[in-house]
Amino acid sequence: MKRCALLLGILLPFFGISQENPLERIILEDDSLRIIATNPDHQVQIIYTRIDRDRMNTPGFKTYTFGLDSNLYFYPASTVKMPTAAMALEKLNQLRIKGLDRADQMQVGAVTSPQTPVLGDASSANRLASIEHYIKKIFLVSDNDAYNRLYEFLGQAYLNKALKAKGFTQTRIIHRLSVSGYDTIGNRLTNPVSLYHDGELAYFQNEVYSTFYPKLNLRNQIRGLGYMDSDDKLMAEPFDFRYKNYVSLSDLHDMLKVILFPESVAPHQRFELTEDDYRFLYQYMQMWPRESEYPAYPEFSQWDTYVKFLYYGSKKGQKGGPVRLLNKVGDAYGFLTDIAYIMNPETGTEFLLAATIHTNANQVFNDGIYEYDSIGFPFLQRLGELIYQFDENRPRRRKADLSKFE
Image (tube, rainbow, N blue to C red):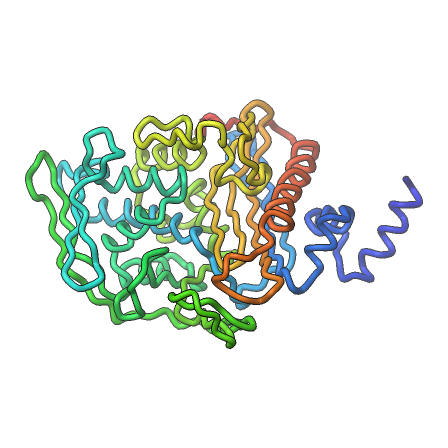
């Protein structure tokens, strides 16, 4: 063992790996992680933040990174739903309408094609749509329509300007997800939205057109050898991501940190949420789908880990254990991403882990042929397991009190 440690100490600097970075050491020492993480085709980026508590249970943070590059484009997919959910709660609070809250009825109109309306939601207890119900669906099963409706409530300009003002400068959220017919202009237009309290109209927002576009200097936004168009025709040319969503891994990591530990940043960087809003988010960010009554997901009754890539992977028929993830995943175009706070209230283990990996060997986008099962999910699961083992076994001065999140 001493010889191995000595050899590792010699090799680490040779590979540009710092001995002071436990994240890099863990990756280098594990063959399955190292082979994938050091392959430039996979464009792996990882952030691990260690959390230590003082005698008042106040958290302190130490962050380590691997391959981090905020100017290298990756498609964030459903991870954009996390800041959108937080911003929907913030906007509702900023309306300052007496009595109006996140559980009140929300209706969506349709003015310009291909917009579609919403009058209710059969999966809610009262069969009405609401900001609260949409947020539940976002974190329980990553529902696309739920995100789209909150995007329409916020409007493109409001959402992006507010996030930028909080310091999230490597972010652009500029389109709906998994709905056909919307071009760049269509996504600038957001539907009229009405909010009701006790059956009476409390707030009306007309159709909004956004002229604000976040300008980011990103690499690799035009990439690949081809893509399938909307008619399932193979186009033998690179795919253009310049008008697609983007949130850097650093911004996603910091957004989650701000949601979970708002006291760790200056007031102007926080989301404007109530204590009850925070409790609500913590509950549904970690809940297994089977634990929810409204909405109910019987199809996931034996698949707790459906959207828990880090640590649990994505195997069907898997029940969750004492380790909980307050997280948001994204998967599309061969990109897999998970932004997670991983904790075990029984042991006091807690840390932040964010990772993204690209798996698209044929370099054709939108064909549905990606190496998620053979490379992506196993990599994220193994990464989460090893970081968890390391973090649980490292010395701590005090056991964390995690009752805030239970």
